[in-house]
Image (cartoon, rainbow, N blue to C red):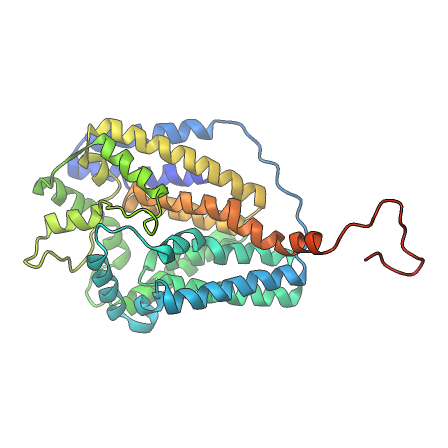
Length: 386
């Protein structure tokens, strides 16, 4: 799996959630899909080996920093931030989904706060901890694994797909032989079935996984039939640029595409949705005109972001995190390309600023607090230099 970059996963996602739409919207689906895939594919042809940083054993102090930071973030977010446990399908079953939809109605068109920004940036924190276990001591590995599993449970919310991909990324590990692939896929599907049972999605005779694949395309057709309006292509770019303006510093109004389209396709008297529908990434492409230009722009932005972030994964040898990120890049086109942009921007911040700071904190403090040995002064025999 190491040979597959985020670019390859993104191409697979655009194709998987784009080409079948030909049966709903006609040949335009093929044209727009090719237009978006082409820039991403061209960047995969670029030969640029990324030198991996030499692997260094993590000290006990560094593992303590990683564990302590993760616990502080988990406790703080669960008490004062996003409070994800209230949406957890394993704890509250269908009530968790209802609370999530209620929150989506309340926050429609509003930018996220500090907690939402941190949650987006630290989405891959548990996988960063898992990747760090190979450089840690026996007892530190147990601590890192434990907090990683707890955070994954906390972040699961009501998302079955997130559970499926998390299990698959962990089960794959660093190997890619057929036996490991079959085991990983089997465990992931089993986890998806369990999550669907807790959410109540198995109450009818339909297969949840097939429903999850078919309905975005059905909704896309319903959206186009409902004539839900259009916007110029530069509004698509504007929504992308707004991602660089933190809502808690710069009040902004965002276009909640899936919410707005759900209200258009499934109108209600109180202007609230009972279920947030998705329309595949082509929904946005058809909405922003001219659609062909929007598809090309989406592909170019995705190619650049995925290429930059993937290089950071390789340089840091974070292969579990890279695989999970790749699976997300495959799944995000089920909804929107803007969701992919948000995810990749957040992970760039995580990989360039947050995780390196955590893993190097003790080393930086040691250099700052312990002065270097003055030139020419040698420690006495049998004594260490202070």
